[in-house]
Image (cartoon, rainbow, N blue to C red):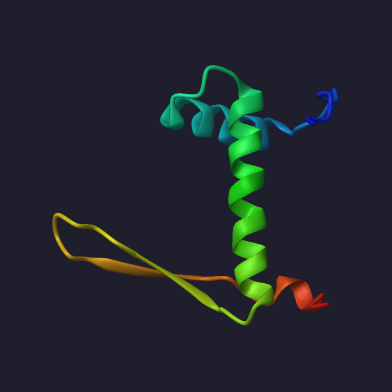
Length: 80
């Protein structure tokens, strides 16, 4: 059974709100809530991998073969 939706209110400084709008626009989300939901899912997945001992994410451009490495960090030293 699905839990009913919960309403949450956030306050953003100007720069953070502009970033959120950019995420919404680039991801073609119909609203800000969709962008926030996706961002939360992404962060959760990265945190779970970090907690499992993974330290990097490698992204590759299939057209050029160029690669970039994203460092997952240590979570601010707050490992379980």
